[in-house]
Amino acid sequence: MDATALALTIYVLIWPIIVAIVLAVIGGAFFREWAQARRDGRPMI
Image (cartoon, rainbow, N blue to C red; front, side, top):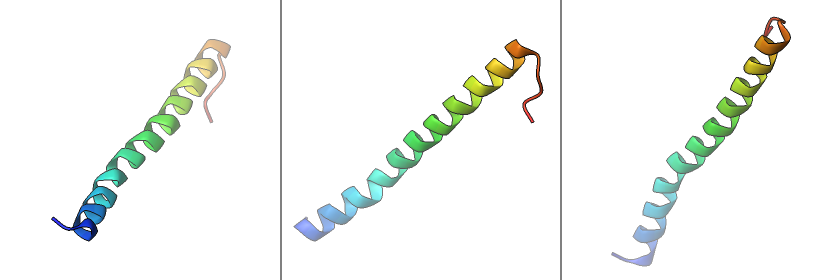
């Protein structure tokens, strides 16, 4: 495997990791806000 193929393989495989991290950050923030809204007795929207 040459360097170009290796670089392309790493590039393609890194995207799902980046997407998973971003999704985890957004999901975590959402659930923290949701839990805080429930504790305060106010609607989320």
